[in-house]
Image (cartoon, rainbow over all chains, first blue to last red):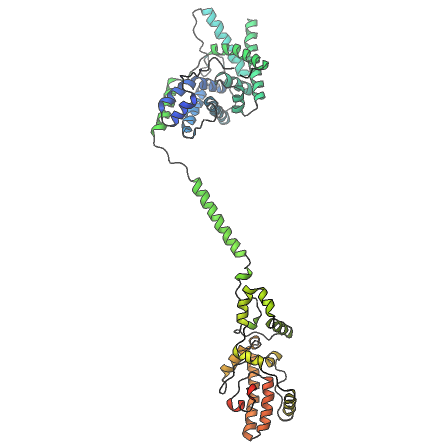
Length: 199
Length: 272
């Protein structure tokens, strides 16, 4: 169950863990590569959780600063993605503790702070509009999910974490993580389909 | 390879379907300025010299353990009862072995207990050789006391005679004299007329004298001196026989009291 988005690690590709170990030993180039691999996923994970872009940028930076600060103590005890999203989750939790509870993602085009769904431009305008609307509905459904289910989905989708890893990061059992992911996927699928059927 | 359970397979299908829509929804990326800030932070972290490690925990814990250990040691040593082998020899022994400080007169029961301890069989001492050896050294009699202990008792007849003559001629010395004082006057024999100091030393040398107060010793000494003066007077009058009788009586009551050479000449050799 590996998301298509996840970078495939081949024999020629240096693993995340090795890159992090190299960065620990002072290789900044290794960090560049590591950052390039995970910057998008972490940013979207934070953005979907936090809602506001400005807040997401703040939390995103905090995640990487914490990772950089912890480089000297880094030990390979789990997959690097698990470690990274663990840090990201803690930062999100800290953010909500510091500030107001979850702010839902606004789909209002007038809202400057709202997440701008940057769908790929298509050659066919109608098709592009349809996809954009579908994506907006998905994101709307995602925002309406219970936080635990949304978190499970994002860890799976953006971080490429397995059920066991999701359970580890969230501090739950595997079956709980699985149940949350299942409910999240069902609700997202229903959200997209209902709107499509209605259209 | 572990086969995927049907539930997981179903979950994968659902995930693939939703994932396609999700990827189409957007590929937001962090802004370039944020990328630059993170990369700069990463380089700065590597470039800056290694910060001194927070290695205060180890010294602090060692110091805490040392303080606790020393404190415990001190407390335990202060509260620890002394071991029998560590005791000062004779610290708990009867006071008869310590001659110096004058103390109140012993009660008869205490005296009996002391005598029993003095006559403790040697086999009992050998049972605790380490402690008893030192105590035995202190209990070892001085030459004078040894001589006194081995001195033969007065013949019964002489004693009766002396008592009779004493009651007839000379007033008896204070019968109220403390029994302990009367019983043991283990003083060294003096060659000349004893001084007060020598008498005091003579009293102090004896076990029971050590138990008496200085006042009692003075009283006894005064009584004895008074008696001796009367005996001297009898001698001067030429009543040598009566003087000898009185002196025998005196010696009976004050077996160790130092006598002048002239009075010693009146006594048998073993009673001088």
